[in-house]
Picture 1 (cartoon, rainbow, N blue to C red):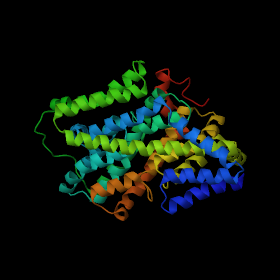
Picture 2 (tube, rainbow, N blue to C red):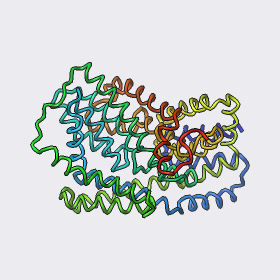
Picture 3 (spheres, helix red, strand yellow):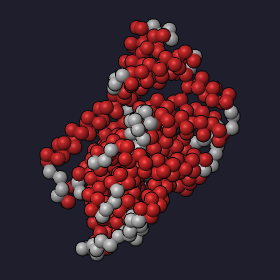
Picture 4 (cartoon, rainbow, N blue to C red):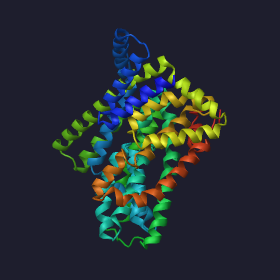
Length: 438
């Protein structure tokens, strides 16, 4: 069994280091492992093709491209600027207010777009020039933007949470979404707290910007954007539409706002459709390839073997959770979020269930882990996008990311070891039976 595990993950990481695309690497590593495990080639060919198509034959999967398109429309449709103004109105009294504004704006925008990379790009493009004008260290500004962006994959609507739901076999999307609110807020607060501490040390002041518009007008401008979340979540919770249908509603609503704001033309909309199709095709190809890996792991008994191995180390719930968190944090540094969810959900979910952890709690912990990994090298998507829009180098940003990363890990441990944090809101909404260990 150890040899099978080494062949599967060893060949996968060798191909990653060789520059093979992740989706192709997953498929090739799965085929190599299957052939070395004694599965006949003709059987593998039939099963692999069936698994690929069955893995994609899901109505729920349609939610991913729809939410992605809705987020892209929000990004280019004038929403980000309005959310930044509202965030500055709320936290302008805080030292280093522009950094805290960035955190809050990322939380707002994440709640609308559901994408950490989109939030990094949109908020970085807006906030970086403002912070440079007020004398902020560009490396500090970029670090805060990068580290606060993962709140966007926790605060619903969230594509990664939908992906986890599908991979885990149909975990309630509504429960995951409701649990994401407090989980994402805890992460945002952790980043904002360190941003304020660093701002005080560097002597950054509170806001002295005089808005030309009154506070009520800023709120009125921002409320339509925030209503997108209420419409989507309200429809899901009341049963008016499914998560997939919610994605369609979000696209229509965001498109209507973009037309009203007159900040997006037909050329821009065409580009958004093209970007959405490309990103969706990438995700679907990953899902198809991971379906082969899922079959190979099930056939060879890899998840059960890993579970038994961890349980042999300790049967203490807290020790096992600590091991899982450390492993996922490290893996998040090397893998993008989508393939990591597809690979590690079937491995660790049975372990989480065996120690009394609910599927919703585990899903939020998993996504939070991998989101934190997106701010670290060598594969951190938010890190590279944030450095690009902030026009800074990774070496300069790292000295600020390290202390903020530590605060993010503290927030992760709070979410991991205190089940009430991610589960209390779903429990109050009657979406989970308990807000503690099963």
